[in-house]
Length: 492
Image 1 (spheres, rainbow, N blue to C red):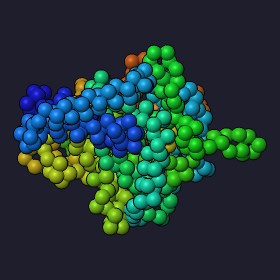
Image 2 (tube, rainbow, N blue to C red):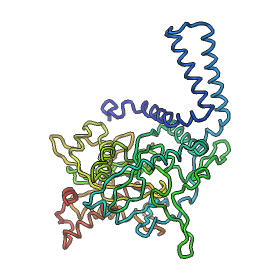
Image 3 (tube, one colour):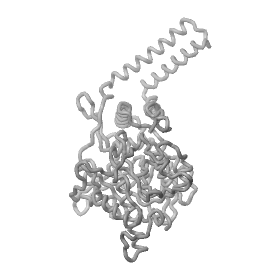
């Protein structure tokens, strides 16, 4: 693809480091001001900079003593910065490692939830939890409202910004990831998000709070990791930490005389919990679902097959949904559609409005991802119409900064009829899905593996297809099936 043809890539190499740095500075400026050395340094530096500009513009007298004053102020600010940097110089050069067995053998929140271990290849698994009652509720027609929880917003902010906890726990983790992103070329910048404040309850509005990606990184992604100093591998801090007393996504309970660890319900511990939104998209022209490969600079699922559209929910997705009786579905579907457009129209040759006009989306499931501190994830299915003078194929191209394309049969899931789609999903899920605690090896060396969200989206879609067949088909016609997923999945 020509650089000039791809609007998203023309200045990408310049935009990413600038956006990374701006987001980091904006997020941490308040905490730096609460540090007396950082506050004095900033005041001195700003005063000297303003004085220099005014002197250059000749808006002040420009006397020799005035110049001595602002030069001295500038030198003092430099001295303070050097003292502050020297005090903890070695602690600024760090790396992270996972805490071994931190999430091992964590059980579901209660009996309504099921634990699944997903094969990630190489002997690794990822544990997720799902509740079939919640899945049926989301797939149904009952309206699900949305309510803003401002108390959760304040609680999260106070938790992260508590001075000692920020300085000794969260700031070092954020600084380490920021520097890693700068040196490796990864995208690591802050965006406004919404988070799920309390566990989903059937028949009740869903509570959400306004948050941001850095909050999520610190409270959902970093837990279960420790930070080590490069010079001597000394452990500087780990999460959860004693500084975050009471914070942990699971708890020890005694059941039948045996101690087990159970994932806590949402709302019982402090975290951002910005939900993931993932959708599998059926193209009308090919009657198949297309997948992408996550690029190597992504923070999650690098190198794995990922769904047609997958990412995290933005505040923009939900901010106009609070007055809608079915606000949760609207917000989640908004996020799925946005992620699908962002990742699948790489050249931006089709506007988001025109793309959405060709698109239908529905929610198929929900799960919680253990190693992201039990973070919420929604999955769905979409169909992309081929209406208009141009085929949709002329617009679809991977967004290179996020996902990669390629010629591979596994990146397309045939969906000519319901029987074919179910067979293709079964073939993939038989390798991926395993019951918790069951020994299993599904992937051989060199085989593609699927991201967690893509795996769960396929599982949810398989169940939706099965429910349709059980309702409408007395006897399976197999290859002769005339139920086309592109139509029937969106007309019930």
